[in-house]
Length: 479
Ligand code: URA
Image (cartoon, rainbow, N blue to C red):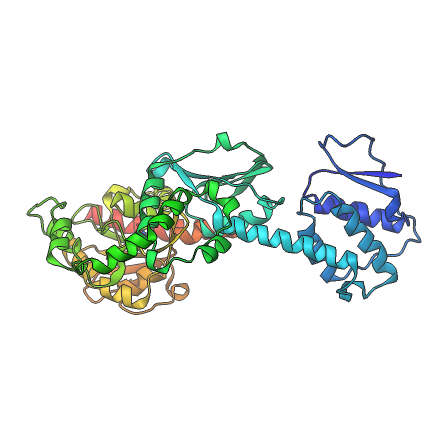
């Protein structure tokens, strides 16, 4: 008997190396016992892998098998390693085996892989992050109990979706941690390690209750979409039963209610304006005006308008895209992860952030809710156009000699038309009123780059662009 010990439950490479050596040495499936290091069931010392002799033929494996095997190995089914080897063994004599949809082994590997894919989708849909810490120090932590060993396979989805925030997903098998540029995996955790609730959760529950439409209640469809076993980790779950129970009464009340005041009504506008401190400064007046902007629909879901900040006559104006989640809550531009990246690059280029004016092309956060997270959405041309008059007036007051457009949305706003940034990047471009503009990448773009070398190269180019800005600042200081 050959006792093969794999390094972990997801050790596909280990399985592949062993399977290749065993196949070349003609070891039959029945003569192999597969196990995973660290499992209580491991009773035997592992057998060294057979050494290939010069005559053994190369093993050719169809891509269809490899694709299924990579997913099926993540299934919790203990017999999966043996099943995969049996299929490999049979493929030598039956090269068309994977096409036999009625074969028991082929059906089994397909069903294991499908279960894994389903579990990955559930994880993508039902992970709910809870915030710990605030503003720049904050981190989002989620507890999830996957049915299979899918944490490593699913982590890239979260890294891409939530590139701008530092997050950890804790599970009993494995934990994934993202710091804005790398994912690190650690040992499994317990539910007690994850925060149980946070202030955002209350906001999320309120939001969920407000979007729950009792007149459109379909309990069966709801439970199919959101299987009950995931409810214990969903903050909104505690609301579902009471909302369902009260649905009938709420529908009757809705029908009986008088119409509500439209969003743009004077009452609502006054409520927002009351919060803005009155000052005589022209920029402060503009800020006051923009707080009540209804030029597009984005104000409806945003917490507040995020206006620019910095010295009122700064020689340099940085223009970003739109406030992100953190900026929307704080009411200030570039205070979240993209802001941290910007601060780092500014410091490296020798620019004091306090000396530049920082604003955004679009002044409201555009997002779609995904679970408890508000997922950033790129503003469209209509939204950029609707918001542009604020930028024009802001620039007319600050009168910077250099405007820095961070990314394509900012370039669209600065030049008043869609402007591909590749061609303009790093060049000084004359503006109509004698000022100049420079286009560079947006810091969020750098945060999202998956490849470390590419990220380092793009970051260096970003800092090089900012050094041009530093020079302009020095010249302004000297003048
Ligand atoms: N991204 C932006 O473009 N602006 C901000 O204020 C924050 C993130």
